[in-house]
Structures are given as structure tokens and as C-alpha cells.
Length: 414
Image 1 (cartoon, rainbow, N blue to C red):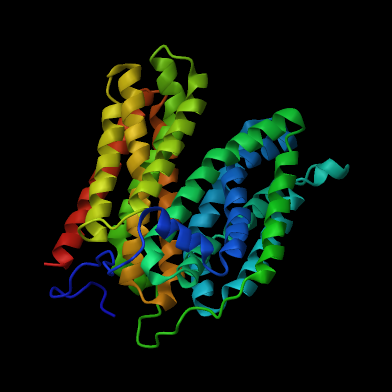
Image 2: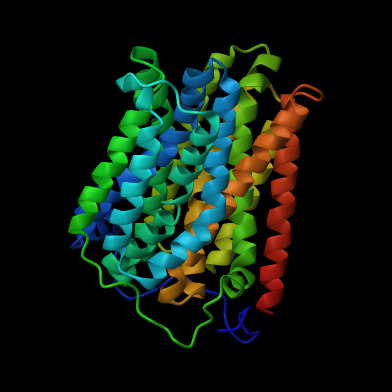
């Protein structure tokens, strides 16, 4: 398969099968597909720990040293290990059935993260290097499961419902990322700093047990396709840039919104409800996008939606008052999840089935890099230039990324 589509090849298009289900029917077919109950249980047990871990690791660091500095380091190590290992981890799912791989990686993740809560049984805190190593293992070992579960989903449901299935998956992930940190904060407040990590480890272990019921023969083998990670990256790098742009904006919203509200003479505690509304808007947008077939190519959908997201965040950073900030923040949330769905659908059509998990995991890693960049931008600018500037710089970087990627995709198909 060439690194780019040949000029006479059309860009991947959404399927337009006669009588293909749409709206509630499409989601109904996805939910009723054999294997979906098991897939849903495993995906909840895999994604919820990932959503909970960053904040839970902050509490682990605080419990070990009395300072939140180590916690921030542990959360950063966890995210970096995820990003580095996601591609190779996804490649493992392209080479073997999903069930055994899920059981292995979720079990190891459960043990690694569970050891972080050892002081609950009366032991002294683990040495800092051990905490860092366990956080890295916990982030890295199951990072390929994100792409592996998405590939398994597409093998589980009818082809005519792939877009609906991807939208349902994206909205589920958005929901879990909204719920996860709140669960951690509430549990830590009611119990202790280490109890959230026990729940995380237990949830991963439950996912490993549920994976016993996964029935999967593995992806169809395509011996003629490139096997190297480099060839896949060369083919889908515009999609990776756009994924990073989306998560850069999301990361900027999460890190810059509380101080931005304070700068606007608004209680920073409103950041929590606003971010929950941001996530809820993403769920609504994701479900609306997956409910029907839209005209044009997936790459066009993605470019338009990601650009709308980055520009909305850029306007939100302007001094337009609290009502304007809320409006454009919700608009950004509304288009964010559909953008991720369109990107995933485009990658799925570009790659053979035997490379889906690798491509999806690379998207996941790119998103993590984008989120991390936003954190560094906010940390570097918030004290010197203010939260408004930090949010604007992140949005400008994301806008540049989507323009570059859209132009590259346009050239590859003309």
C-alpha cells in the first residue's frame, strides 16, 4: 500500500449503502450485535482507569511525600509512557486475537497500579523511583488496548454501522473522561488519597476477567501491506496532527479554564460545571454525527470540525465576557467528539484491517502528545502572560496544525 493515496484514488468516503440504518436504528444495530455486551464491559473497565489515573496519581504522590509535586510527576510519567507505548502496543493487537492480549495487559496494569496503594495495608510508602516505575508500567502496558478495542468493535458490528459504532465509542470515552476525575476527587475526599487507586486497580482486574468472554479470531491478514510503523505513520500523519490539535484544545480548556475564570472575576470553582457541560456537549455532538451519513469525505469532515473547534477556543480566549466564553466553550465541545469520530473513520478506511489497531493507537498517542503540549504551554505562560494568553497560544498552535494537515491531505488526493 503506498504511503499516500494515488492522485486518481478518491478520498475515503462514508458508506452510502441503500437501506443502511441511520439514527436510532443504527445505534440499535450496534448495541444488538453479538459480542457487544462483553465489548462494552471491557471497554468501560479499560477506559475508566485511564480517565481516573492522572488525578489519582496526584493523590498518590501527595500521600507519599506530603507534596503535590511528585503527584504531578507521576501523572506526567503515566501520560508519557502511554504516548510512547501506544503504537507498539496497538501493533500487538494487530498480530493476535484481542481476548488473550486484553487479559494480559489489563492484569499487568492492575498489579502495577494496585501496588501504588500498598501503604493502605500498613506498609511504609514505596521509594520514589519505584513509584515512578510503577506509574510508567501502568500507563504503558495497556495503552495499545485503546486501538485494539476500537478494532475489535469494527470487527464485531455490521460494516454499515461502523460510523455509528465509532461515534458511540467516542461519546463513551468522552463520558468516562468527564466522570473519572469526579469519582477520584469524591472518593479521596470521603476516604483517603490512596483509595481511588484501589478502585482503579480493581476495575482493570475486572476488565481482565471480562476479557475471558471475548470471542475474536483476530484481524484479517493482509500480507501485501507494509508492516512497519513508519509506513503507517507516513500514511496517516495528517490525521495524527488533527488528533493532537483536538486534544491540545481540550487540554488547554482543562488547565487554563480555572485561572481564566479567576482573571475574569468569576469563582474558579465554576470550572468544574463548565468542563462537565463541555463534555456533555461533546456527547451530544458525537451522537448526532454518528446518527446519519454526511456528504463529503471523512477527511473533509474532520478538517472542518477540528478547525471549528480550534477557532472556537481561540475566540473563547478573547475578552468577550463570561456569556461569550461559555458559548464558544460549549461550541468547541459540540464539534470535538464528531471530529475525533471522523478522524478514526478516515484512518479505518485508509488502512487494511490488519493495521487498524496500530493506526488507532497512533491516534491515541498523538492525542496524548497534544494534551501534554497544552499543559506545558499553560504552565509556561500562566504566571507571566496569564491564562487568556495561554489558551490563545494553544488554540493558535492547534489551528496551525489542522491547516497544515488539511493542505497535506488535499495535495495527496489531487
